[in-house]
Length: 378
Picture 1 (spheres, rainbow, N blue to C red):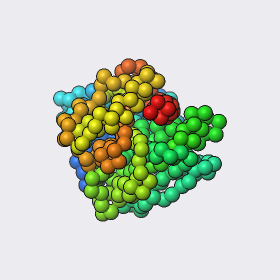
Picture 2: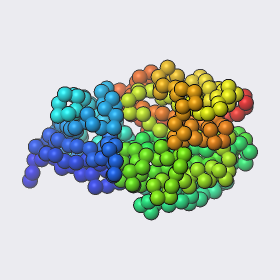
Picture 3: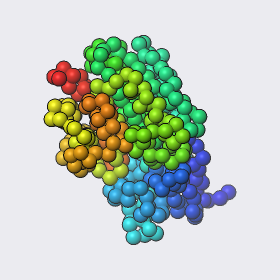
Picture 4: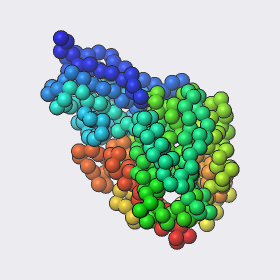
């Protein structure tokens, strides 16, 4: 019997290439997104190593999509695929063009490693089916991806305010769908008073996963043909970005009064919002919608902050190919990008899990409570 560990990634969202295995040590590399230069997401299974310390070296990370994502980052690990903790990780930019070294001693013979806790397409279908079966929820197959998967869309609520929630345009940012699970569990709970009040005031339009193909293929940032969906919003096409085309067409049909697009950020160890400072013809009143909501969320949860984030765009210089800026410009409404970390949240560190699926879900609920207060003060 071989004393070498075994490594597999031929499953939903799996991504790794095996360079060599020697006993309990392996050298690995991340596969690029299809037809794309992006690479950062990894997800693989290691077996045959109960009680042995394993050393996994992921090579050639200097040319990854976000090299600044690796310092102070810990890989995620699970032995039951339910609880995701951290595996001690170090990054050496000088070794083999950038190497992340992961060390872990499992108690069982199987352990899964990932860039962040995966959110499988099976779990996605469970989430959508459970929501579709909830009272007052309408399901629609909004379109079809290039790989032939359905683009799932849920709508509910009786109010006049049209609220759009979209997530996982970038499939490796699985934080977004964990956030969606928390938000949808809240919104479909008949005993939740925040949800009841929001459903009276709003009609919700929710696309929990905008990029099913990239999710299943194990991509970081693109769909099946290598399109970065969050750069397709100005001129989406059926050939390159049918997902964005279907969503934007539905938005044109329903109108948008408030929009949140949910993401994860590789480098910044914090939760933050990005807005639409640079869109043409921006007024103080229009931008106050964003800043007011941001202030409410900052007050409501210590997991959110405003000190760290992206540089603000120069007036009139917004990138209108992005979801948030296109929606804010197109519908003259508050729109925002919510970012969550792959690293820990430095303001409230958790050494066992760092930023986690559980905290994503709680943040989803916090964002909804902030939305209710925002609507009541508007």
